[in-house]
Image (cartoon, rainbow, N blue to C red; front, side):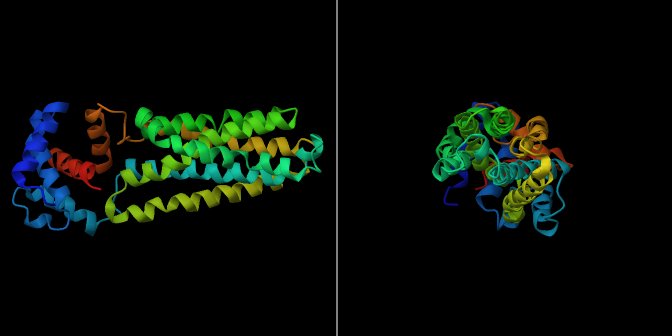
Length: 289
């Protein structure tokens, strides 16, 4: 709001010239108008009937969404579950690893080892923004997912308490950035009308991961002296499909200067039948808050 149509047209044209979309200037302009006034788009004379039809469907058929969007939300949900599972693995391991390392009487040290991922995650979360700008959402989820595989597995092979602490600190390095990225990734691909419902599923799946972690603790409880190693290392399992299948998600947020790829990705999310209606809707999504 507040920008005249002539000013908006000049900004759109400048954007299209900079990123090579000269053949779609009119479509981008219509999308910018829709993003500028998403409530009263019916009164925008420049929008075509197809534009208004697809924008209208976001209200009347808000849950009629493409498979690519549901796929992305499902993968983000699995990434959230990793967080809960990693956090609860230490609950069962507390019963045995302090005795094996001779620190059962040092409550402070045991507490620091347990909270290692959270302590380091608080620090690494500050790096989420530059890492996302460098790698994009999918690249960030992939790289941080590796920190939820190898350090998690390495915990099972540690021979002293400081080795275990180092592994858990590296876990936190990935978990802090990942937990800051996944909700934003979900929010980016979700239409505004259902964004709140889809993004809050993040908390639900963290809780589900905690539930699975408690179940795994119970399963390995009677293994014996090695129980804590299985309880801690088992959390690597859900990270495997995340790092593999994240590359099949449409990635709207990518490193700079890749606007064509961003447009293609959001076209998959929008999943319209008519190409021009698709691009007009895509621009509306790209420019909307």
